[in-house]
Length: 355
Ligand SMILES: Cc1cc2nc3c(=O)[nH]c(=O)nc-3n(C[C@H](O)[C@H](O)[C@H](O)COP(=O)(O)O)c2cc1C
Image 1 (cartoon, rainbow, N blue to C red):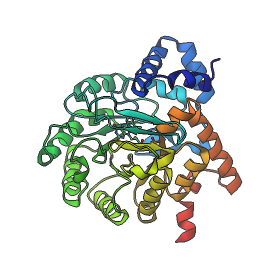
Image 2 (image 1 turned 90 degrees about the horizontal axis):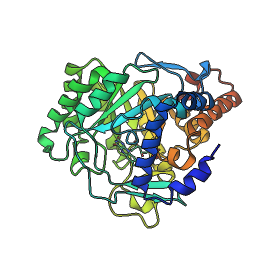
Image 3 (image 1 turned 90 degrees about the vertical axis):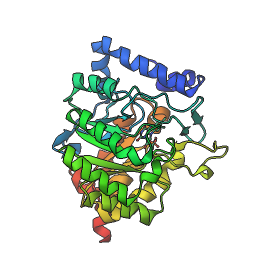
């Protein structure tokens, strides 16, 4: 069997977006080979009572999910079990299809195991995605649907885009994520303000009974981020996802001066933001940590700080298809070492000991 190391040598010779598109085609094609799918599910999918949780009324067989942005158009949902993910988040989806920003818009920083992207919500739009979700939902893996406004929608009309998206997609989502934290849509991050967040979650509360979460940027002032998250939860948000990519270009040598950085370079910054928010919110709402997670140790650090679930994107590109399996197995070893018999005992244990 071809190792990921060998495959990566080849893929990394291609332009990063071409490599992504090729990988997407291959992943989609795997549906034609049921034995191949079964082989990978057996190989990578960790099912263990110690990791199983009910969250948002849905069973999460393990806590490691695929972060938004990899499967923007919901074309690979069924295949995510082959990579051992316990849940998947599709999108960001916008109401109308859009092309995103000019290419090139995805860059690798191989030494730093990081990426920088300036995609700008390229996606096929709500209706195309809805058709695919209708075919697959409900699925054994919980499905998150990440939504964002169109580039051409004025900020003062942004609420209408989010309402349309929730109305159209909520039936086919186990949870919905409001994305106002991407750095690649001009003005989007300015929506990270209390007034808009209050209005947003009032609207979602009136539109759906599905859990709606807020995904935040790592670049906000920590106090400000926390008060926005508190406001979101008070207004009806059922969870916080921290964090999106960063615009702190000092984190990489030779960073571009546009787009958002993800991967190892983001890990500590993302953790610090998560930890700050979790100190206040971990037992008040569901927290999902994302940003630079590529090992069981890093995932466990987030769990102990208060994350019920973690997500990966860039680590998946650098470490390959067995990353979720390695993280899940490693988490169980670390739990054993700490004397925990279920993940719920590990979640936020650092908080409990400090309070
Ligand atoms: C190429 C790329 C595209 C992304 N697209 C989205 C997106 O559409 N919506 C979103 O909420 N986050 C998006 N993200 C951010 C990831 O979901 C995640 O928050 C971030 O990359 C940090 O995690 P990581 O270090 O494991 O990659 C994207 C990330 C990358 C690398």
